[in-house]
Image 1 (cartoon, helix red, strand yellow):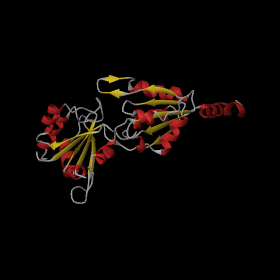
Image 2 (tube, helix red, strand yellow; image 1 turned 90 degrees about the horizontal axis):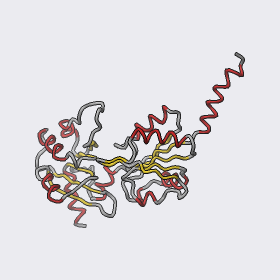
Image 3 (cartoon, helix red, strand yellow; image 1 turned 120 degrees about the vertical axis):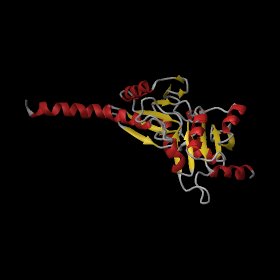
Image 4 (cartoon, rainbow, N blue to C red; image 1 turned 90 degrees about the vertical axis):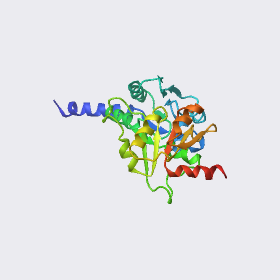
Length: 264
């Protein structure tokens, strides 16, 4: 085999890499279009393909290049437009035929958004990928409700945790006992459907039934809703009001700051 023969496969690989598009994992933020990053907005305006999630607001979707191919990959409890494996395969396929492929996710791609999983598979497939962070709802929704997650008088630590876990994950369940004692503020994503169980676990771990709790639905959007209570009463309040997901749950003394905000 001569030198030209040995170099040919390497040159073919380099040429193939040059022909691949790039995938941008972009966080759309929690809903308010004013919270979309300038970098994310700029990429939406020049994208060839945008694969977006269910919780991305219409105002954000309106930023997408009118000529771009738009694909709904939304996942909501009980129904999926596209399964996760299909989404990743679709990203790889689109990157092989388009220059700028955007995976648009609500909030931040790496905060309970499966962005890490998608990035890993894209890299393994040899697809160039870049992450554009977004403002996560666990920070923004409480802020719009007037609840600071930290406060010098009430909280110097925050724990972010999911209330809905994937089957077959690396460990069987969230250690709610550790969560209860780990920090002064607890922020729970996707916790409404399991709220009764979560409250039971936290109180059994030692949290007082009088601990303040806030539920913030559609945080940062014009139709944002809030439900304020205590661990003792919140499940009954949810049942009585018909409060539904998607919502962020905030637990801790900082929830009392909501009253200050409301009286402004």
